[in-house]
Image (cartoon, rainbow, N blue to C red):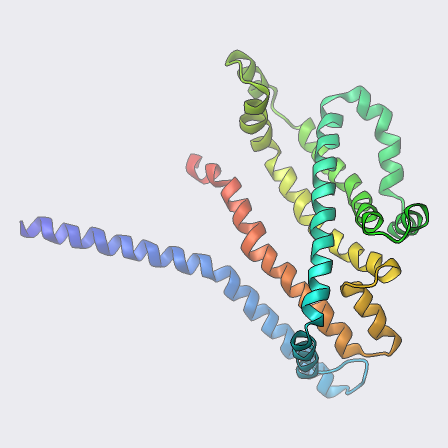
Length: 275
């Protein structure tokens, strides 16, 4: 009985140790990111103190402006409008680009025919697409989101096309042998193999889309972070420009840490099990 009780205590202690280790491992990326950002703020404060200028306000001044805009409600409203456009353009670009990319990767004749179109759209400047969208469709929300999506779709197509070309034909043969339906084929054969390419296109897409959204808002919207940056640029208020920019960057970092990375770990959990 004593030996059994002692072994039970050791098992319980081992479980607690593993739980603590997992908690530390989960918190380490966030702590590292926080330490890195604090170091950047320290360098920024030193630079602003050594070369005082209206063009480079210190972090505390930017923080005061950010709190003021947040208290008035303007910051939350404009951040929400920009975030809505980012999400809408991201979904359109990823869905359309993924479908077209997989089709081009699977059917070489279609790829050969549409490849010149793809090269054309890849090299078309984002500013031209935005201006033409506003001229052709007016200064509307649909034109703004569509212009951003069109700028990102070719990049998604290229990435997903390479993923479709790298598909292992043996898995397709297995699906045929086991008579998997279309949905099961997509879920169990296609998606696991395309996941790394989808993750790469998704991560680069978020970074690119929100930058283009700011240009879209600057040129033809009456709200959003881009509109506010343009407004404060006219009066040369660098502190307000940095406050709005850093607020949205902070949101994108939170999305990366607490949404994108956990989803990516969940999607690739089968790899650690097989290893």
